Length: 129
Image (cartoon, rainbow, N blue to C red; front, side, top):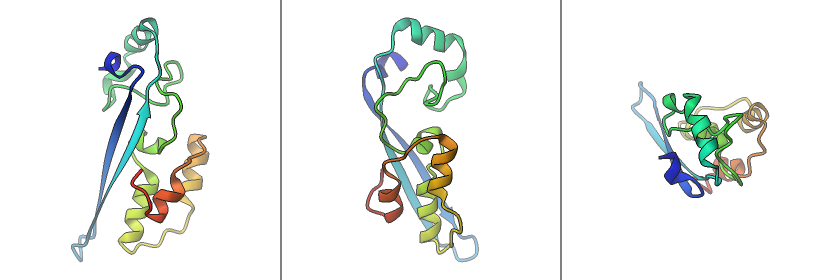
């Protein structure tokens, strides 16, 4: 699979469902993220596979892997590729009527050390990205 993704752009979809058990209200959201893979060499791929790191990853890779670095020119929701798109979750919670007291986008970016170019669109509801 990682050979077929090399040099290609694929999409990661992460779904979120928030349910109020008392009222039954449900909010559903999906983060769809374009992930551009770089042209890594066979030797890089073999070393990564030998590390066994991809064996417990849903997509077979770790976007933040220190040695492999499979992705280049990334411009989407980094947290969403890792597994939990926090701005999408925040948006869903707000739609549910839950007041968010902290700046989730700022915390996410500082924790991941990533300047997210899409968080404003996600939080405003202008984008599914």
